[in-house]
Image (tube, rainbow, N blue to C red; front, side, top):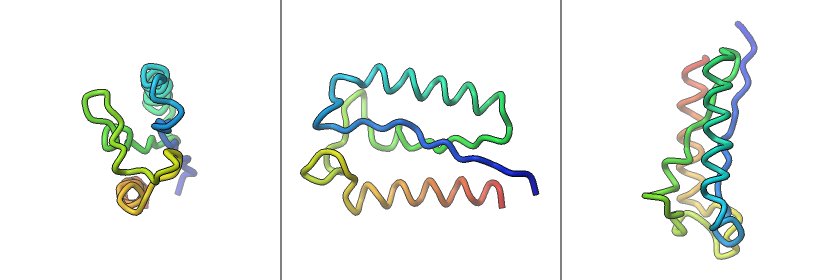
Length: 88
């Protein structure tokens, strides 16, 4: 069993990073490129699940705009489970 590391994509904090979507997408694309080259890395792809046509789905966050709510965490947990299944 080889060691694996899971990379969590950068996610926007809708209250503070609403204008940083392009920067976040760039960070995620760099992470994707690195995880493609380095097979010990697994990228957790959930950014696409919380963004729709460049707009942050605010219904996945608590009112503080920083933390996921129950639905946001359900999406995150599902992606973690999928990543773990791929390495177990």
